[in-house]
Length: 327
Ligand SMILES: Nc1ncnc2c1ncn2[C@@H]1O[C@H](COP(=O)(O)OP(=O)(O)OP(=O)(O)O)[C@@H](O)[C@H]1O
Ligand SMILES: [Mg+2]
Figure 1 (cartoon, rainbow, N blue to C red):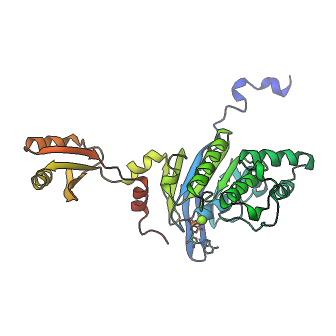
Figure 2 (cartoon, protein in one colour):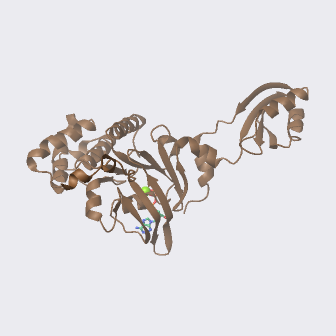
Figure 3 (tube, rainbow, N blue to C red):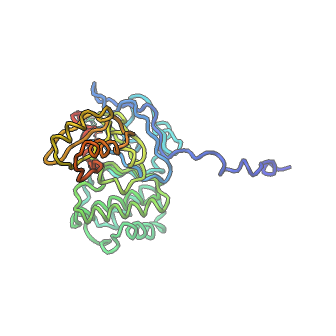
């Protein structure tokens, strides 16, 4: 009997649980006596469009450079599709496309020449390269600029060319270090649309940014790091819940001073204060039913004009979380 006949359908390669695209295990990196990454444990699943957020100096670039095999960890380790980034660096390099946070100095090269050069670096046979270059240019919307000098491209176009470059060897994982920085709103939206298209094509994408709200609608998952430590990892919607300790409600009521006085007597209300014609009510915890506010006021003969949830932006949550923590 041949080997293959003994393999039952259950043991087909599709059965084992998928290996995450990226996993870091207690990943640590020090520069001298400064710890840039501090025991970071991160998991990015396949086909995630993953936002990696942190303020300046948080450790984003350090993490991405380790994943891109350009930097070695001080301790801990990282895997890309199950491959060790140090011990199997060559394999990892073919699985990833890394776009650094600044663009190289190739201003006097033509767009096609530049991409052809990188195609050759990845040993794409010359007969295939022309089509590959045309395909990636099409994908990033730069076909019309194929003969242009890089120095003559706008910033947004240069960023898209940078993206085309990392796509040339058809990597499974894209590591993009602030690809939207310095772009105007229109170019930014175009860049985001390209990334969504790449996700649809099955790529796993990690994109770093120091602006949480920028990635809010783009990414299905985010991680927030600060001082090299992970402070959140999960869906964007979860950030607010996890970060804000208490639920805040805003109330308009007359007479206001009496309303504040009554609200302050309610045990499940942590605080009530007048702020520019409204009352800011902080509930003792997240699960408290804000209906207690209306009940208290109505019972106390107060006219309730408006009661609504705090609409603090994600950015404010982010700032609150990372306040004063940068190195
Ligand atoms: N080559 C280096 N030598 C010494 N310290 C470094 C080096 N590279 C980074 N650092 C330090 O490590 C910390 C993390 O830097 P990193 O570049 O990873 O942050 P980042 O999150 O990418 O920040 P930014 O948003 O500014 O790009 C910072 O305190 C930085 O000063
Ligand atoms: Mg950086």
